Length: 222
Image (spheres, rainbow, N blue to C red):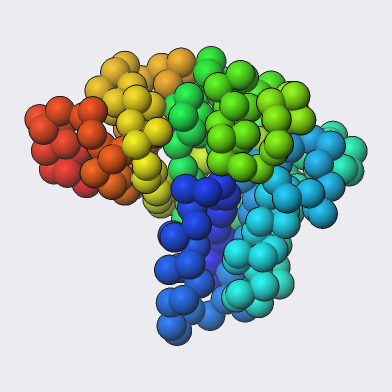
């Protein structure tokens, strides 16, 4: 049995294509948890992360043990169910991205580094909401919800392994802030530097603003 957490968004397209194409994975032994979801978005909406996971991961692998965050259900009840389920055993691998504002899941700056609750309701900041429009999930800024359910930072850090896939030039400033600046709630993904088994995959574009010395140090620590 393996327990995993899957990320969504356009930055994860190629990664999920490669992951679901792997041979020999016994997906029937995989239990899937959901990283975050907009409040008020139905599964039929193009931006629904439930829809995203269903189409890009679940349908392709046949995973049957899953805990999705339904955006149209009562948020308190969603959080209660998901929290009870995730507490029953450790998470083996958490897949994440990093947002244009440095967010980890939907923990926008200033992120809550203190709560031990597995899931929480968060406010989405302007940069995060504009990113969603830029990626084509919504037609305009006002259509993007202001609230979401997110896995907490501390819950993400409880994972035995964290793999963060962060491509694209539009992530370069966030990557620089998270890996050359201080570990801070204002750069939420900077907290990944405290995890003993976290690996961040960058491409040339997302790593463009990182100094060679920092890149060498990060490679050596991995």
